Image 1 (spheres, rainbow, N blue to C red):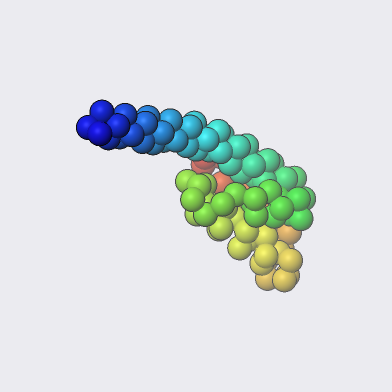
Image 2: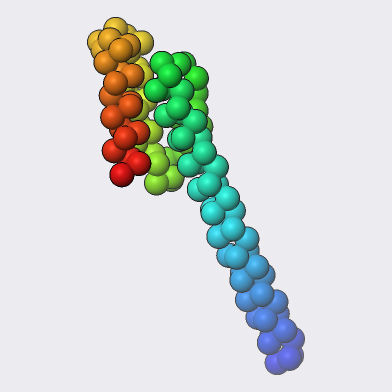
Length: 103
């Protein structure tokens, strides 16, 4: 009976270790994907393709470290759609953001 408990506990520990390591790898992969989507969204925004940029920004989930930047960029794109900001000014704003991010 005692041996059975030890074996069951060992299997449970191994199960959780395996799940934690794969979750960490998944998180890293998603982080790279989120960075790629953010970069593509910024590229589209600098080119003035706000519809495509908005689509890329919407694909970044709230747990990403890029989410606050994405939310701000989405708000600017929405302001352009509602004609609160001119398209040229928005493009200049996105160019400045890209320049600041490269430093």
